[in-house]
Length: 156
Image 1: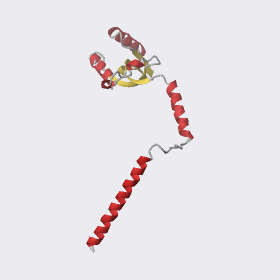
Image 2 (image 1 turned 30 degrees about the vertical axis):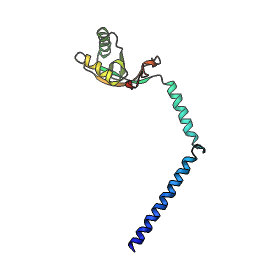
Image 3 (image 1 turned 60 degrees about the vertical axis):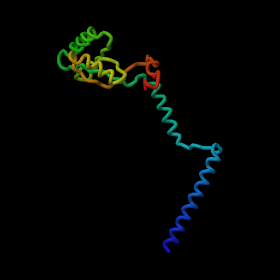
Image 4 (image 1 turned 45 degrees about the horizontal axis):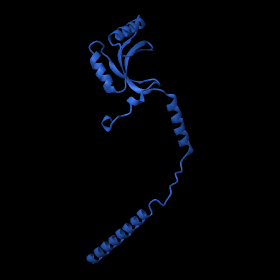
């Protein structure tokens, strides 16, 4: 009795697998003959259009700056501008930015594309200006896109 049911089970499995093999063969023979229609919500298309519009208006990319000081109190503004001038004299090729976030004047330097570039510069200045790396939106519309396109697969 056991062997009979086992035999019946094996035959059933063999038949079902052969039917499946024939089905998949038919599907590959009909490849390229069907059509696909994607039905989606119109709101998705509107969101994509808004996203494209926003990207066209925003002319910055994320980057990094090093905050070398945050000053508050009396004479903070004068001290911030004096620190800016002193930094520019020492590192003439690096941009310096002062922002005011009440009650602090923050002095940030650099327009670094990657955190690694910012870290390398921080290592150069850390003895003079102990600071920390901040992520900012930087780089106005005048971007040199050729620098951002990898020249080879090794650059990726």
